[in-house]
Image (cartoon, rainbow, N blue to C red; front, side):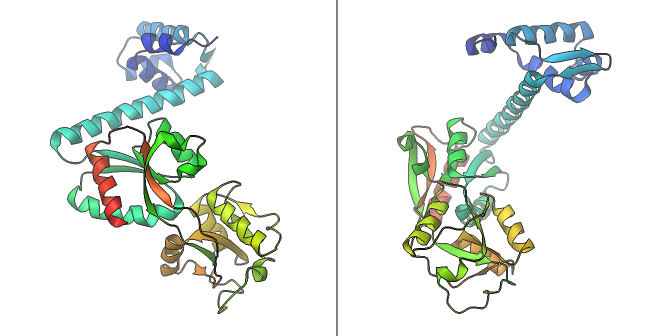
Length: 307
């Protein structure tokens, strides 16, 4: 049985986690011991203590060395995350002490990417040493990362959460939507379109129960049309762009600001279809009651000014 969390917290040490990472990189106890600057007997003892702390074997001993099993690979993955988080902690503390720089982890949904990019450009003019991690994903996954403390803030929608009251929010923008396609799409030069004219084409859509998917479902329902059969489903902006580039017959629903940016680059065109439905507004989101770091507060203020 895997040990309890209090037991793991009291027994595991950072050097032991470094040893796990070194063992993964070298597969040899001798080389791993050299990397973390301990003796081989010391490394053997440390590995035994790690496995004892977890209450299970993490490595298989072979003639070629040590091979992590499924539990070992899981432990190594989280050891890397803890090591990375500690490096980020040090980086942020240095920024605070120096009165500049620092580190921010921010989550973003596709429609808010242009706003974030513009705000970061302005912020970095005064904070050139600022380090920013940007995670683009769905609202549900971003809220999960906020819950875990892996994001300082996010621009997303809390309505997808079963407990939206767990977050502090500041509404930013009402998202306008566009139907987009490859510039070589047969209807790219049309002056006006009805949804029924797009019914026979392939669609790229968001996964079920996501706000943009719900908007599209509502549009088809109100038009008395069957929702597209056999669509391509993705929440990835890049995947959507690549699919549209590869197949000029495909169409997709996309936030207006993203569609306009892609049009300026000559990658996509917006089709002249009026969307009666709108997606719900997105917001600046943090965990309820959590005080932002100085760097994250600067980004929060800059994003609000951009609204």
